Image 1 (cartoon, rainbow, N blue to C red):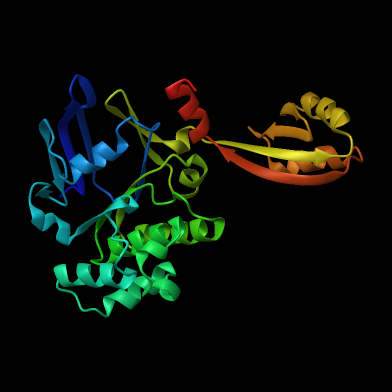
Image 2 (cartoon, rainbow, N blue to C red; image 1 turned 120 degrees about the vertical axis):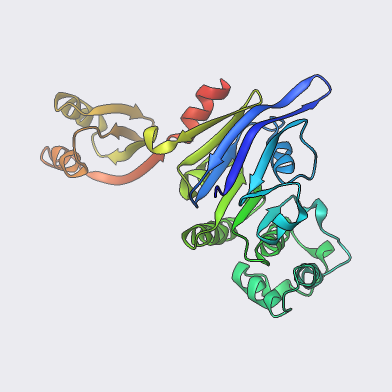
Length: 290
């Protein structure tokens, strides 16, 4: 049984083909990122997968069942944007309502609230929540029924660094426990931290990419004598680029120890060194001609 099976899925608005005969199969748990510029159709895609809006044609199966059956929501969840929240209700009210729908004990409410770190404002009305607090509530709502498959629409939107780290940790833990996560995001740096599997949506088509095949690792170094270091490293076959505040070195067949030794043996002081992983941003720029 596939976790997600999409066959020839299409959706148009007037003359615009938003989804054009998309097919995709996901058989193993993990995290997939859905990426594309604003307006490309990411939210439409998620809404069609969960049958919140009907497809023009094609079939979708979630955990072996048609997405047209309401029963699928017993084992899946969909985190939408915060417009689905009610300002006059508390976070507790939202979570208790979902527990009632899924016929779960209300003891599940403090469990998920504590997991996402919203205990302190659980019983405050949502109208008083910040954007980050609303994101915490939405994630808690998506976790109430312990889903095997979760769709997340911009789960990292509006989060401060502390909250972003927490949500990232939760997503990785869920994936390790066997949950499959498909999240849309425009935050490429955060995507690089949680997954190497990316679904680029372009011209109504999905482009599935394993970033392990595209990832680049560079080292940015601040040195006492950068010009001298560039000459030395070029002679030793390193790929070096001058930066405003130092140099950038891409390792190919050489090791980091070789790089450091090559610099130090010429009495050049390494003031700072930083590992920079890139890949999705470069590929994004290429695909969407940014």
